[in-house]
Structures are given as C-alpha cells and as structure tokens.
Length: 256
Ligand SMILES: [Zn+2]
Image (cartoon, rainbow, N blue to C red; front, side, top):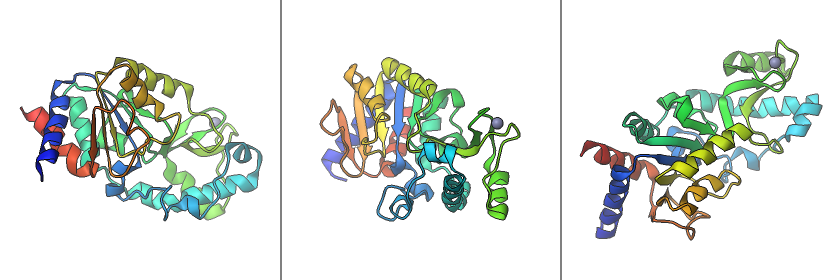
C-alpha cells in the first residue's frame, strides 16, 4: 500500500467516525463477491435475452411466460447467494446508530438477509426475494411460485386473480413513489453520503446520492472503474474493490 492509499483509507475512516447520519447507496459491484452476476456486464443475461416490458407482462400470456422463464434462470443463483463483508459492515454501522438510510439499486435481497432493518432500507429497483401480486400487492415467498412455474410452465396467479410477478421493477414500470420519497428525505438529512460499487449511471436512482452531495454533505465514491459522478461534488474518490476497502474502514471507525 502506498502513501496515497493510506491517506485515502484514513480519510474514509475519519469521515465514518465523525458522521452520525450516513446515507449509503449501493450497486451491483458490492454483490459480485456474493456470486451475483452483473446483469449488464458482457456475460450478463440481458445480452442474451430481450427484457420483458411491464406493459407486455400485463397484457400478454406469452410475455408473462417469457418473464417467468427468465427469472427462473436467475432463481438458483439468487436463492443460494449469501451476504458478504460489505453487507455486514453496513449492518454494523446501523447497530452503531450511524446509518440514516441504505438505498440500493440491487435486487438480490442481500442487505435484508444480512440484517439491515426494513425501516433503514430502500430497494429502489425492488427485490427478487419476494413475489408481488400486481393487483392486491400482497408479497409472498418465491419458492412455491417458481416450483409451480417450473412444473406447469404457466405463470402463477394470486388468490385474488391478479398476475404474480417477482417484486422487481420491470422495464417500462415506474419506481414506487413511496420508496423514492423515503430515499429523497434521507438525502436531505444525511451528513455523509457514500456510494459503493455503482457506476452511478442509472437514473433516477443515481440522483439520490447526488442530491445529498449538492446539499453539501461530503460525498465518497468507492468503485472499481469510472462512474458518472467522478466530476460532481466528490469529496473522496477511491478507485478500489469495495470489499477490500470498506469493511476494514468501518471496523476501524467503530473500534476507536
Ligand atoms: Zn392479489
């Protein structure tokens, strides 16, 4: 480790130590260590399959079958994935009373599995760890629905008659307004904002950390590879694997 890296690491620790209302924003880069593939990457499923748009899902049985088939392909990966040191470090910050809100773009459900409380978590793009009825909005566990689809090749239907769909936001589907509101409220109150493992290129999600930074909260970005916010109000930019850098900084900020 050279001098510059040491300086940056201790700057990160100092920010974590002095902040009391931290807003954390996470993207796909924090979950690759948990075996979740980056769906936008070159090996990603999106390069092989056309995404099903929400309107098509709601109006076409063939589109619903295609969507369930696509989700079934990812199901084995998601159901076996375990949170890693980054997910656990964020839980430590919450237990220390320093986490204002965790806003994630990830749909893998790993923050929840690691122990982040629902009242501290905004899953902007929804979650694969629940199935949601598009009519009554009841949320249920995925396993029985995937088993039904695997056996019958028919999309499962809610007891109310509505279409069931994994609780992720589809292409052409609006983000839940209540979730955006919770994230924006946190961005207005945060005294530190940290973006972890995101290219910050997907909107409106990426407006959340920027909103906090524009208000004057110190903005730290840790990501391997360039991000869209590298020239926007950034206080500290660490070009690094977030798994290697963030958990030790949290440990040292909380231990002293
Ligand atoms: Zn229903």
